[in-house]
Length: 177
Image (cartoon, rainbow, N blue to C red; front, side, top):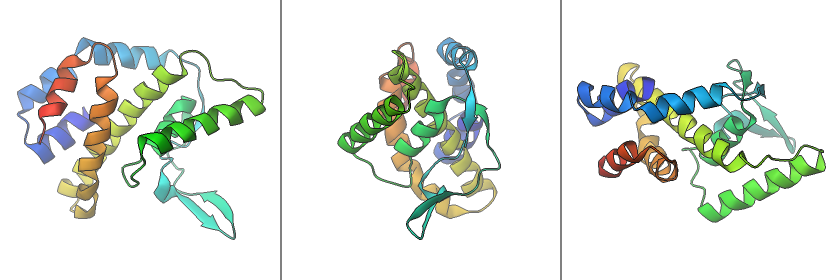
């Protein structure tokens, strides 16, 4: 709802009826239900470049008040599809390889659904970020957030196009300008 109202409605002036139609897609409900059924770990929930501070050669995390149980892939998706940073597909693939390798070294391997869960979490994260950018930029008057919308929409298009049963949303996003 946050994405449909604050990004599509406020930023792109999409009619409320169209936003509600897209938000009501059965596939979105199925995805939410599926993700809600998966095991949880403690996640940052805003694990993106602006919340990682390098000090004296050491990485420190900030802005973790939203930390709660969630899917491990959500934090990875937040970092890999961070609208504040332009990451190429090759760089993203290398970071995923590094993540898988690191998990393997710790004795925790990625399951066969890892790629699917990562895509779904990336979609969820990008929709949340886009809703926040619209709200913060247009309701709260923090216009600087609006500059990140085009990159986030481009990433969301790529992700949604790879998710089964979301063709109506994928087609809509392709036409969004």
